[in-house]
Image (cartoon, rainbow, N blue to C red):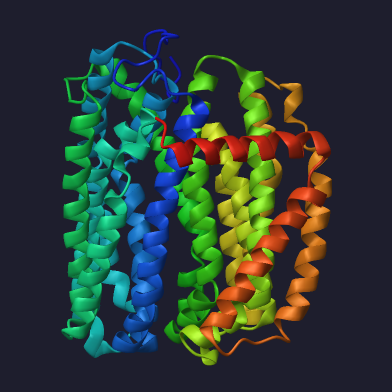
Length: 527
């Protein structure tokens, strides 16, 4: 058996007894998307209130340090082996299997792999804690504070990694919607803890402590939910072959995560080459684009368990059609949201945290283009992982990561933030070209994988982006109510243009029908 593949018993067409077999793929996707939208809407609201508090309470420099600490903590996430991600993918691929004992052995195997990676995690974490003050370029008197804050963040990463195991089972069984409201509630609790830490004068250490508390609470909540919703959940002693197979997938996922973090090193590169205050300006300017990309990631991830099940059943033509729909919806989303950001982000920054935190029109445009590129890349990355072929994706990602980091470092020295963004765009082109080719191999070169139809939506996107980028540098809203109204109108118009002009008629009908069906099911609350 290849190291990066793992098989269970043959899937049963009747489905998993504990997973509501009567629910259709669209119904579950609708509920999963609704759950993601609810939780992320609350997270967005909390962030909009919390970020100005943290910028004011910590100061521009320490807020930039906090953002850099967050990115560095992300590197340590990969050192746990990503066994819970591997578990989610395998459970998702074989969710209709009735071999519950095998699934419990998979949970045990994921725990075993996680334990195996603990020494590596501890070593990497200790090294990062020691080097953090140098990387963030803080004054000598801040060294102890930054190291303690980093250590607390490492603890939060460790707890979150273990706590993600029950969540992975829930999502793998396509029951992610069963956690509806849980993350929303935890976002409110976390926001209150973070704000309380700032107001109490806890500084970086207080904020990091709040993050650790939230990670513990989240893990406990997921454990309670999965024990209620998945009757077979538990951990049995795995077989040696099962550990080896799961370890193979985990290693490739961990490598892929490292590559992803390398390509997401923009904040660290900017902080090392320029300053922590430059990081603050860059992060705040890109806040809206980052939120939009995260929302797309959650929504796309919500529908992938169903697609993974179809791939597991070898229905590659059907999977290719669903991938086309996903790309079409992604195109509409990034066009509408990107145009809105280009037109009104300058006003948003002005109203939210002050005009001095806006990085400029060119940086704003390039950040939006990076978000668009990333959204399309992630669509194909999800399909490749759903086919249990992460090794193929990682090989391309390694090349892209090296190019992205090298170009970002070189161009940031030359052109600052603009150079940084150009380096990211150019480096990730390797993925933009390579991932579609990998998808063709994963889905056995199904004819439905042709991408010729994408020329039209990309042309419409380019025209809208050109117009809104030009106007956005000349318009400013000075009141929140007028800004909200302008954003709503722009978003609706851009969505209409992208849907009506950007898609071929046949695909437009399919996508519109899918959206209406999902909306009806969400409105009825069917499961």
